[in-house]
Picture 1 (tube, rainbow, N blue to C red):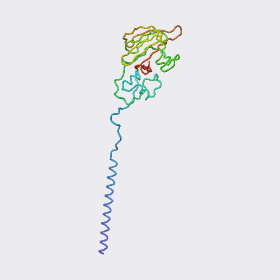
Picture 2 (cartoon, rainbow, N blue to C red):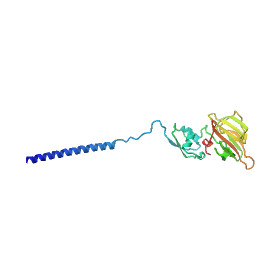
Picture 3 (cartoon, helix red, strand yellow):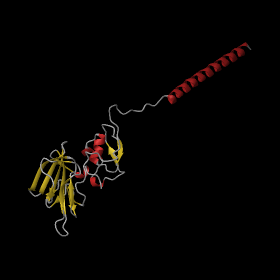
Length: 239
């Protein structure tokens, strides 16, 4: 009888040890599981010092050149990264990707800034930049004049060159804008300026009229940065 009681007591004690063991193990597992669940997930962050990127929505009167100046992005890079093959097709409302801008944009351009270029002549573009025209590679654009009208300075600057007959270009005017840019105006027209004149943007510098009956005369127009001719569509607003 005593042996049975002793065996029963040992069995109860062993059962209690097992329950405590399993309870302790369960608590440890739950604690570990809870720790895994509540541990924060740390995501990799963008290295400090890299400028953000964004899109710019084109507003009326804005040009690629104006947008590049607003964000401090190189003009050629802006054209390249956006895969713009026809700069004449830039339209109001279009989104332009701004790669790694170096500064915040300026205030919205409600009106064109005084340093922006304007069209020297309103007319049909009959030859674009890079096109071969009359067997010559065009380094500007040719704008046709279907009626007598004025040619105007695309930007303010000083007249540094004038020739009544320059090689194959005919009458030629060059205006230095005194910031690394210059504009070239060539063709058959009557000059209204002389070398040394300072002209304001939009001021008449010549008059042009058609070449006789049903024959369109045209202005050859270039925008140069330094000695390099650039595509005028980068700088001229749509009209």
